Image 1 (cartoon, helix red, strand yellow):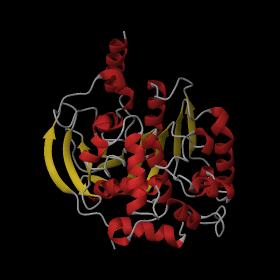
Image 2: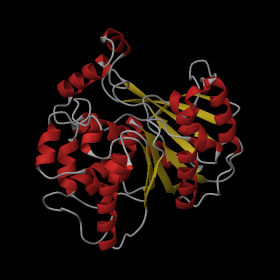
Image 3: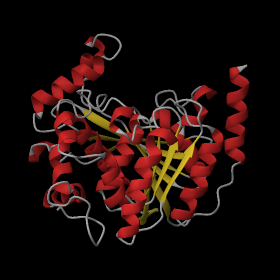
Image 4: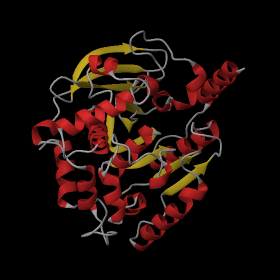
Length: 354
């Protein structure tokens, strides 16, 4: 059975990666989360093999760009990044976002570096320079709508509304958040299968939308040893979880049924690091993290939940990233990170802001 299909079977069966008592199992356990996310038709859920499109090198990493069918007329891009001088096997990190470009810091058409103003958001670039192999995946809605459909979408959030409507027509039993989780796990499959990746040392890290993807994939797939999520909205009211491209109308019923995301964190998540700033904060997340820690202690899984609240808006800060990367290196049995490259990126960003 393919690894992704096995993960969905485990979710359906209500099997947890953790031993011992389960928070809300029976009424609020993994089965309810599966129903909340929904599921695709069996044929749709079995994505085609990832086909290598091109290989190229940059001054920062070696790259392989793959294309994987996600529907009858759509594909998603998965970019595999490797350190320039990689020997043997190393830990791997999945970094989901709108597109791989904004995680690797390069325009994948021109192979030129993106502008430095968003240097703090280039998680894939940061991680590959620290010695990790990185798998960056393109997110729904951009891997669901055709190029023509994206161009035809009305401005603003039109592409999101159109993608949600198309998904509802094609897969009425699947939520947008279910598809986002599914696609993140496809990128994890590609990463785990690489000969230079230690499949026992996998993590997932994301910002904003990518943080949502990282959180659900990390909580629902026992392969992951750690999650780093940046300002994604842990509390239901902190983000737009009720929009059609996430949970839509299902969210009201989920909340009435007692589902809250700290339950996933308490019971199913591996060690978790939250970078808080705008939508996540000490005020909104502190009580949720405390409740999750208490449950983990009762089930013999004490520790493993950390937060850095930088209080300065949606984008992560360099101090918050450095704290997260030190934490991640310890969890992944990696050398302490050398931040010389991050300091260069920070200076470039500061210079561009003047």
